[in-house]
Amino acid sequence: MSLFAAAPMQLVEDAEGGVVCWPQWLPEALARAWFEALHAGAHWAHQRRPMYDRVVDVPRLLAAYETDALPASLPLAAMLERIQATAPAAYNAIGLNLYRDGRDSVAMHNDKLHSIVAGQPIALVSLGATRRMRIRPKGGGGAGVGVDLTPGSLLVMSHASQRSHEHGIAKTTRAVGPRISAVFRVRPRHWRPD
Ligand SMILES: O=C(O)CCC(=O)C(=O)O
Ligand SMILES: [Fe+2]
Image (cartoon, rainbow, N blue to C red):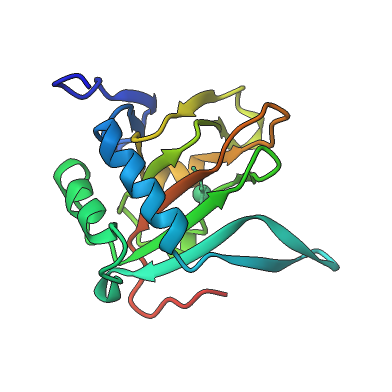
């Protein structure tokens, strides 16, 4: 393990800080321990969502927590404390994604604007296998960038970047192990999942 975290990478620029990735933000052993704890202990659920006139499986497992009721058995409070040191904000909601293997994915999207407070960042911690996130301008404004989200990396996305860009993780035929992302957001006070 190196003494100093790798320098942050600026992936998108905007007036709210854009999109920045800190590779090796966590010490390797801690990233491994947090992966194991979340993999074994989170309330993973399989969701189905309406899509046009059908109901489809969400191609990954999900879990959700509010920061004022964090289970002591999960490392989420410790994760939040570390995030506060790098990308401070009044995070109140944590969404967990579990990509079981290369068949799991998230389609290109932006995080729903009505479900996040304007001006506030989204902080995403990656654990487990490395998967590649694609980030591209909306409306065909260029190819965008790919970023390998290595275990222990932190990705911070501005609210503004959710208006200008979309992001996603494609399926892969490569043999990849499970990956977890923990996404910290600032929800409006009376927001409820739809
Ligand atoms: O797993 C990731 O890195 C991306 C997850 C994501 O975009 C989301 O939960 O909205
Ligand atoms: Fe997202």
